[in-house]
Length: 471
Image 1 (cartoon, rainbow, N blue to C red):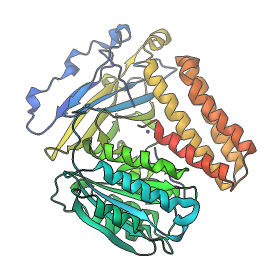
Image 2 (cartoon, one colour; image 1 turned 180 degrees about the horizontal axis):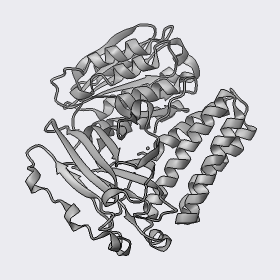
Image 3 (cartoon, rainbow, N blue to C red; image 1 turned 90 degrees about the vertical axis):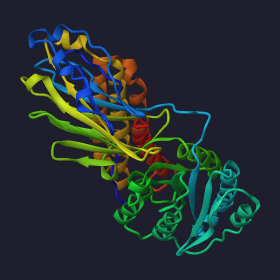
Image 4 (cartoon, helix red, strand yellow; image 1 turned 135 degrees about the horizontal axis):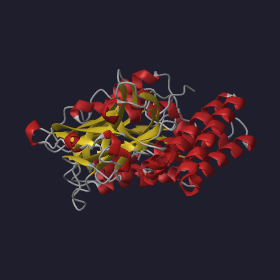
């Protein structure tokens, strides 16, 4: 199985010298109307004496914060964690945005095992039961070919929809590309006006390339079409479904017990109707001389290196949701004005179809070891610990699954050391749970047999752990 990683929060500290300076740019906002807090920076000689205070910036529905886990650096401790947090407004929790939803269901022969197809019937019926006349629903089924079982239709009468769902057949092979392509055709260019969503449900593997599927899933993001993927059972290609969801800006999950499908479809419908920001992306550009050592959880189809730093693709951000990005940086002493990085968040407001962006300038102060210790932000340390543990579990399990037990152990031990260092800085309680999760994984690797059901579940859980800290 190919391995790609998903790389990855925040609460922000700002010293007046380590201040995170926001410049918000939404449509129609004049640069002259923005506040430039650079002018408030004290002289360098006083930086280490300033008490850190939280800071945040808002652009439309999103608030972003960014800062270092220690906002005062010392000469012998300049390798720090840069944490970014993107939070969406709660919005109107009483009102759900209408949705234009295409459900793409794998009905290949393997779906007949363990009654998976029967659960798919039930889950699809439950999904339709939650829709109303404001919504539009379509159903695409596929095995080695795809067909439209229910053409896009307003949910005014449910009986015909239930009848079509109950008539889903099961067939031969699995062609995910074909099913996803036809599913997208049901919502692309739609004039319905609701949130456009494709939800793929599959338990199998096909011969489509990972790049091809990811490219298809992300091809219509600018038109507001988001793709989520749910894997059923334990015999699916998790890397492909994760790539589809990452590139399509949606959500990925796996279901070891098919009865979980109903709850997951309910969650997906809720998310589809509560998108606060569409196609959200965060770019981290480090200042000259600053080294970007690692970004936890955002790589592959979720992000990658740029000329000056890293770009993390968040996809949809839902009302009340917080997304986190954690990076490890090394800051050289003498950096001009204490500059560390510029963080820019961009997204589309789904109601006005307007592009918006927000900028933050992350700065650091220099002082002695006591001043650096006093500037510690425990909340950011917790986010860093969760990021380290999540990515560690994914990396170690990938090596273990490939058969290289020694590399799996080495990867895990290196992260145990990193977490222990974080515990020394922020307190053992900060790393207690992340460290326990990682140590439990190492213990399980000693007892689980390769290729067993337990091994497959361990693999999938470790991937979700890496995703978990970001949401």
